Image 1 (cartoon, rainbow, N blue to C red):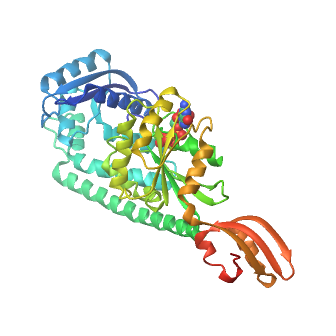
Image 2: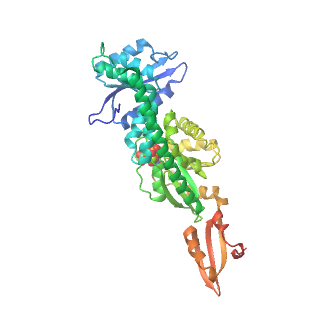
Image 3: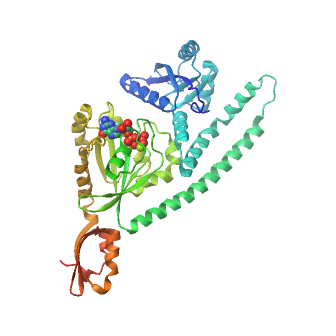
Length: 423
Ligand SMILES: Nc1nc2c(ncn2[C@@H]2O[C@H](COP(=O)(O)OP(=O)(O)OP(=O)(O)O)[C@@H](O)[C@H]2O)c(=O)[nH]1
Ligand SMILES: [Mg+2]
């Protein structure tokens, strides 16, 4: 079912709908995004239809007359695939395929396909497979009807209920196996995080709409060398790098998968292992592409996913990005009121990134300690620990003592002998 995997691009016709008095501009924007998704999946878009619906038709989603009109468009254009911007029920998908005479894919399936193409690591592949199987289970019946038809249909005895039941059971077993493998991944991630916590370094996670510039920012701040691309969902797997703030405080910055409007629930569910980086963060950097015409909706979409993850209470620093573009500059001024803490930057040019680092340091102030220490020479091994866990600004020997000035996390400071700390 991948519209994406053959060498010759699939030729797609796009369909979006407005319901009731939903503003047209909103749907046009969603359609533009669907086009970008189709493009990311390497489908060639031949045309599009925007349907105004008074109500959703339970059987075919859009009206029958409209469906026939699209069937005509499909035929004359030579499209091999119709992509719906809205989610279709399995029955609606089948009924539409019947009328349109070509495969019908909805937005969820398109996003699942893109994720499947992008998954490089075992963790990513397992998560996407889980989401795909869960999407598939309620659609199995339709799949079999298709196969029967391809075999000649009428009179041919299909695999029937028994086969369907067998397949469902096999898929459910696979789902069970993936879940337990993912459980192991989660444990490994949790161990990794515990390891990082031991140093007391603050954990920062980049979140934001896909294509907002999260990876570009990670690269800019840490020379991470991760892929940043003008494509949706360029990043699937989290990358973590160390970042040193202007006060010499060390923290860890994690880049993770981007969000999108109507992000399939299965995906959010399946990507829990990856997205735990969000829940574990001490501070979220919400990267916002301020140059987007409908930036408010993108912000709302990200906030909705954060709520779904249970991360709504986390401290957030809004990072208005792409202010090298005029609209980015203008909108970042307007948007500042919406957030308690915000900074305007351009990850591309680096402008504003110093202010950003300062803002992060300010927000994490209570996690860091600037110490002057007088350590007995016999406890010299602590000097190595200070170097490993923080930033030593100065060190010298004075008689039987080491005098050290250092920046360390508050939690590491708590492990030091209080007698050594000079007030
Ligand atoms: N003009 C401009 N373009 C930027 C800026 N930051 C990022 N971009 C571009 O925006 C596109 C997306 O950047 P990425 O860093 O891949 O975005 P992302 O948020 O990591 O996207 P996903 O991983 O797909 O969620 C790339 O083409 C970047 O070059 C910026 O400050 N200004
Ligand atoms: Mg990215």
